[in-house]
Image 1 (spheres, rainbow, N blue to C red):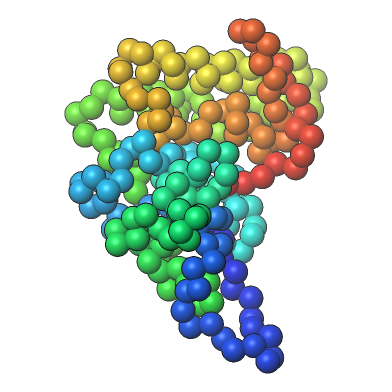
Image 2: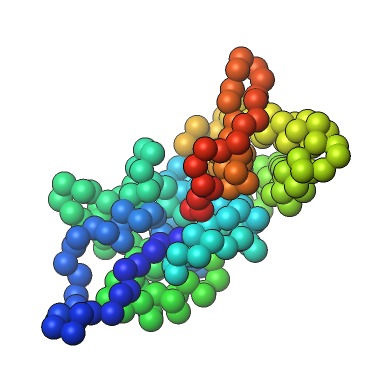
Amino acid sequence: MIKANHRMPAPNEVPRTDCIRCGTCCKKGGPTLHAEDTPLFEKGILEKQHVYTLRKGEVVRNIDETLVVLEQEIIKIKGQAEAWTCMFYNDDQRRCTIYDHRPVECRALKCWDIREFKEVIARPRIQRSDLINSNDGILRLIDAHEQRCAYKTLELAVKGLEGPDSEKAVEKILDLLQYDHYMRPLLMEKLDLPYHTIDFFFGRPLTTTIRMFGLCVKEEGDSFILLPEVSHPAGA
């Protein structure tokens, strides 16, 4: 979720009343999309390749910097390569390349006064099913993936690492990771899905999000090795 700098001004500081185009908000991550943003897809301003899904159960960083577990999936605009910076932000020109068609969160966000933004983030959010034809068979595959790779299932397996059947817990975790990992290229081939849309349809890979449980994965050939994460787990 977008984080804002909403500190109180110093006694001798003149309160801000407009944007100075510092780019800080855009560099904190792309916005979460809401029902009002659906026309952006209908007009072709946004496409499935521009967004990714954070699935139910993922840990994200809230506007107040606290970590929260998502109770419902959300759709966000992607960042640039490995950076959080919104893909539509031009750093050289310090501007949004879709400014006239920017999502509702971007229009509401004023870092000096986040009252409107806090009202907007409470509104209904876009779901994957809102952007996929109801007759499209991929919806059944998404449901199957959600059941097989639910974060609740992964969380229970991680908790099992501290129990008497830790070896079985490791096997369960690796099974989930490998299923999620190998089904993605398979479905891209079978369904002719563009590479850049796969994180929209099935969320981020478990090999990436496993870090929120303090674990990481090392790939050796066709196998995975489960290791402790050296840094603290971070939310989106």
